[in-house]
Length: 382
Picture 1 (cartoon, rainbow, N blue to C red):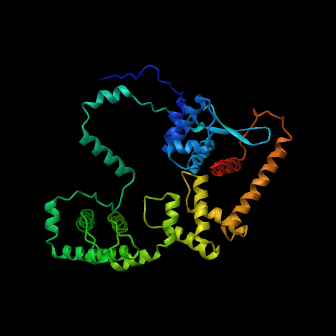
Picture 2 (cartoon, rainbow, N blue to C red):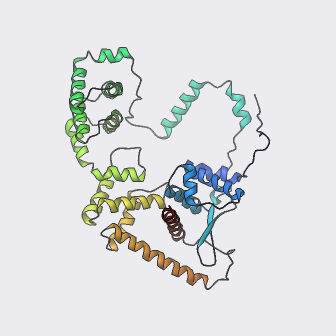
Picture 3 (cartoon, rainbow, N blue to C red):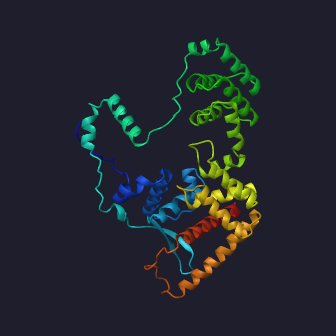
């Protein structure tokens, strides 16, 4: 099969998508953001008004998730706001797309479907995998990567239960977890013992540590063990030093920022935590609110440094509790609309052809306020 054609059945409808969006913008975006954009295009051709909560319901997500997506597309000049004469946001405009300036002169990589399909029958999977592996290793060598977990046969599990040292580990696990071990528990312990090869004494401390913090699911125990393996931790003392340095608040911050590719914070991140709690004197609720706002502003790149910028600003404004943040928000929105009215008084009434997004953060904050108003209105109606 050298070539393929793409067709459709009769009576189906379509929404045209810019090739520039597919070639340049879609490839760099979060998949959920792409879905929101495609749905906005669909709504445009449907010509029916819709609320933010309706979009969220369609995708079974939150209004904030929709907000993040729209904020992202505005930041890369794919969307913009539409206003009425009072300066209120009444819609979103799909912008004409052009290649980003940095890519206009770059060579275009076009998918050759003909070559892809003609090569399919002769593809040697083992060779391709080996070539890919070699390329990755040359670009970014990986040191002490945890081995892949293999499925254990019934014979392997039975043999392991005859091993005196492993039997001791099983007994300790049952004692710490206060339950009989499941098949998944045994698979995890065998992986830690055979594949990761953690010392017996270190496995004992692993079970003790996880039981102490109330995390006895095999998936969690395995994740901790892999982190210790990759950090080359070999003794109980090394593990204890590391676990004691892991501030409980870090888990919550990691969750809010969507950090899932590692378990332990860096020394810099621990220093930020110490600053937020000891120097700024913030409670956890304020710190986590800053994390949520960081993600809202920078969906793809929110980190500890960006959160620190938000908290530093709140500290300078003498924020002590959540209600103080709400007051700052109200003052900001009041000043924002006052400034907008002053700007509009010097422009031609009703004309939006010369609108330029000169302060993206302010526009995005206004959109967020619009979303909150929409949600509150629906809550009052219910």
